[in-house]
Image (cartoon, rainbow, N blue to C red; front, side, top):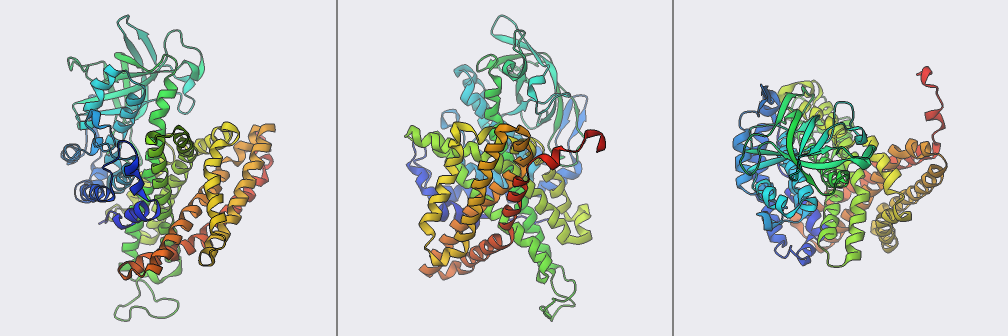
Length: 593
């Protein structure tokens, strides 16, 4: 049977000792977000995840959702778990208190998301989609729309979706065919079919609020003609049935306890959100929220997979250690003594702890972008979030799948068997690399959009703090083994950035060919920045002589050493791939494949 324990010690270490999350309480609206309150919130969330959500993960996967004549039933126990989750206020954890939310910082919300995704990724998608719908309406809806929908989304009485994809188009949303015909009374009739709609139909809530992309009769061609509409399953004023139906459920590789639906709109009544033909801007509010949320799915799966790999490696005995018997009281040694098992476990540990720090760092930037009283500080933070969103989404989901696969490998043949629970993590993790924009699209977003904003303004939001940290700590002898390799990797990242900018202007294929390798190079440098900061804190704490956490801090330093010696060198290889250019990738004639 699989295991999971919320990594509270690691979460608190990053929040309080590395990032100084106590500073959040100085932001307007977050005055109550003291370290004690944050810790108590995380502890309660951990109980919910460990005791309510995690026990349903494997059974939910086995049973899946069922469709019967348009009605979808979630697996046994999900409805009761959702009611408990909602009644405890978790659906509105980061929502505005004006609409009944807890008003917690996004940073704390990220930590909660990680635990939910570790415990039960399929379950977490139901409130996760609602949060995206909440954000879109909160930022772009009318006051009447906010008053109608937000309180119900916050309590969890209603849930939300985002309806983008159609059978003939996914990423290229300019090709959508769903139509919106004005009725003359402020409402519109929405007609079209959307596919791959997560949480599109289920039995958890009394109403489902669909945020739908559609085109008006006078819409310009392409993405400039997209509008966003709120289309409820039941009309909010009368709770009468709207013409919104679930045509079928997808039969999927993973996340089987989340309903992935075909949703048909047949003259369904909807209302415009934001401006006509400006729907993509409003929808990106949901998509960016979702992309960061999917990055947390990758981290959550990586954490729970790592815990199960570690647990098995300590219990499973096979062969003797290469350097001599380590468990003389047993017929063989636990497999954790073997170097290759250690390699996989150390990668898992270095990635999960590094990505946790990176995610929470960006969570704090998100809070600053929304709450800081200084407009310039808000802009700087917003730029950093925008830059790092594709990196968090792509790298953390890539590694979530890799770590889940490594956990299967650690389990050997037992990892391929459903009963152990670990093969589910690989199946669940794989979708995160695809939806909310494939990871290749994230790489194109990084080099094609984010890199050029304001002549590199977004890049400077990352480059400057890394440069400053290196300069400030270059003379720190104890930290030298981490600072020096980071400085070299950072210099190569800057060189790669300049090369892509130069070549990409002449030939866009050059930027496209380099994009995935550049994103991985960037992610590794970002993790290096996180690990050197964690190592510095650990060294300082050890000097303070806190014996109760000596092993914890030493573990941080040793894991940092592994990252810099065994993982950061990949950034050098990725730099060489970037430098190789597009010719060998694009030269082969299509007919020769």
